Amino acid sequence: MKINYKIVVCYLLFVFITFNSYFLLRKQSIKSELISKKYYEEEINFQKKIDSKKNAKFLKNKIKFKISKKGIHIVFPKEKNYLNLNINYSLIRYSNSLLDNNNSMNTKNNYFIIISSKTLKKGNYNLILRWIVNNKEFLIEKDIIWKN
Image (cartoon, rainbow, N blue to C red; front, side, top):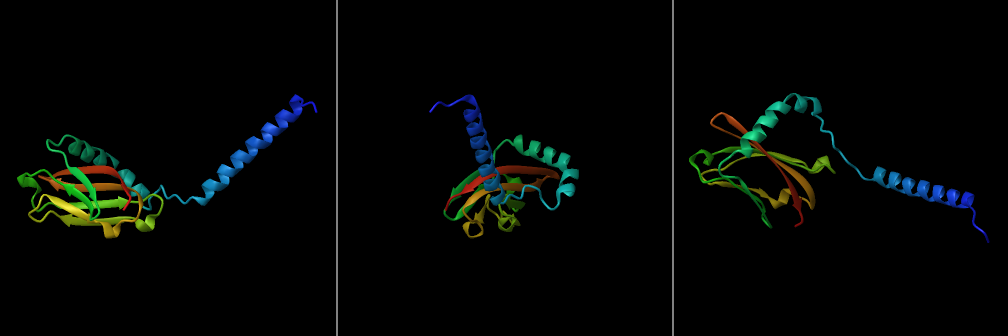
């Protein structure tokens, strides 16, 4: 049997359409919630967010993150400013907004906080930390992969 170019073109077109259809149908079954419900409110405060990130970037002593079976440990520099510090954190899970976690904690005479493993499910999170020292806002975003 002799194969001519018309059959090859038809076959390649069929394979191409099948391949694209498979990925289209597969992507529709994956739930993704990339836009928050407060989208416009967050956009208005975007410059504030940029300034807060810049402040955190130029800290002399960096904040350390450690992941253990107990949870996520966030260790602040051992400076006077970081005692009794109020920290707001958000754990955002883009694949499922029901697993998002917003909370505030205090360092309470320590230089660290622990986000309990009980609030975390296996998967990817975006951790956002916000705090104020000497009327200066700070913000850190960190991608966390929780495996436990």
